[in-house]
Picture (tube, helix red, strand yellow):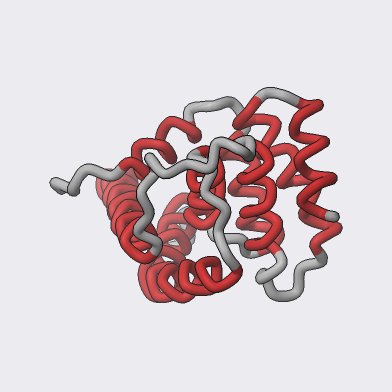
Length: 183
């Protein structure tokens, strides 16, 4: 598939190459039903020193929800079913079906990210130099996780802290940013 250029998609792909970023995001998805694309968007906006408002977070959640509910989650579940070999089929088709589902899921994630980028169209060149990327990412992530249903913010902060440590590699600055974001 040919997709339009996306700074957010490129950023997300780079982040997923950093050790433990993908695992932390997927743990948050599985444990708290966090939307990985929204976690990544909060980091991307923060990395560009763009503090998201509560209204913008709400708009992002609304934009992502149909993608997640109707397309991405069903594809993920189908892929997991196939990996667990719950559905009987010839071995020759099994691997190809999993690969096809994985590709479809990845394409849907890409399209969902394009939609998020369009939802909050902002000029990444208008960064607020007065705040750090770590502080802004921490605030964005905390604002997002407060919106997760059935999730205590205190339960998810260890994951956010871990994610930020993996992304930025500066434990001390991450700790200070988290204290500020939770204040």
